[in-house]
Image (tube, rainbow, N blue to C red; front, side, top):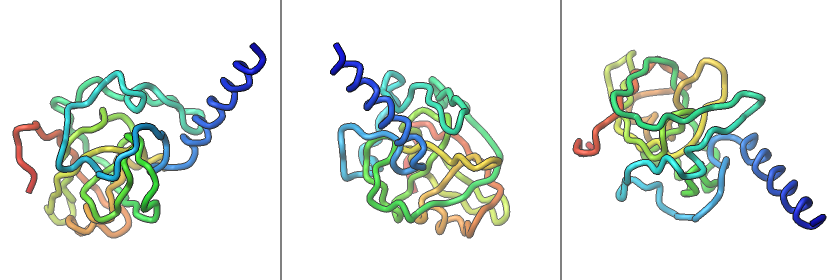
Length: 167
């Protein structure tokens, strides 16, 4: 019994440290070297990465569906986490067209439009974050480059129906 309690505490501590580690390494399970762009699938709302989670004392509740999702807010980008695992367990590859969002179900396809220049990019949300106050989405470096995002920018985020092809 004592071994079980010890193992449980280790598991909880590893989970919490993973959450605090940042966007590209929050959860680890079934590793894959693909960002999931070519084989996008519908979100599994029962997957661990689509369950409520806590970061820095705030509990986030992932949406059960992204249907009809639209949001305007501040975007940033990330890329130094290359090779780390995303919340879905896939390897983060900065030049691929992916993103991190706090509550969209994973994976979800969204179009992100830079409101400063009108350029847009379609991405797969496969990670959690950003956890900096006032930011709504973190784009991979490749996605940020496509829309001319250097630093932060105001963006519009729209859920893409799976029938829409990526450009």
